[in-house]
Length: 149
Image (cartoon, rainbow, N blue to C red; front, side, top):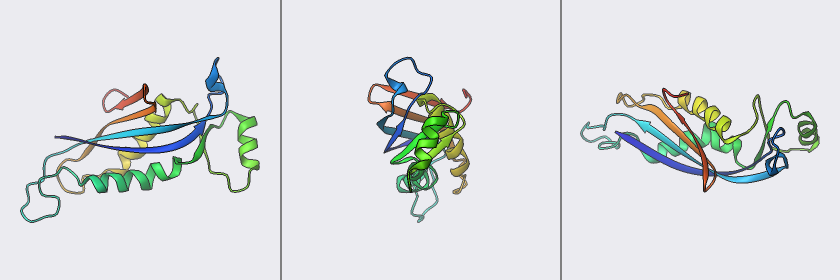
């Protein structure tokens, strides 16, 4: 069985090597969809009976390991030294430094890696992260899919 939880966050970025508008500092309302697989829990009397995982727990885990870190942050490539120096000069600025350009594709891969470690088979139902879909805009997204990374 597959289940999916959607969350949203706001973040700034720039693609320093881009030939068009994305080379400028800007932001997005990102949407992330987290798809997990697992068996439906059939244990009588447990609070998660009939579920793969409680959607509120899917949300809580994603927020604690990823969304809260990226929300209202500037996602900057470590090689973008001028912007990185500027951001570091701002007192108490929320900056996330990445080893790659903060494209939708790279952010989806990073998110998959972080979330894959976070979702454990805590119910004994073979829970596993299958896909992270990251929308940069309503019309543009990247999918990081287990087995196709």
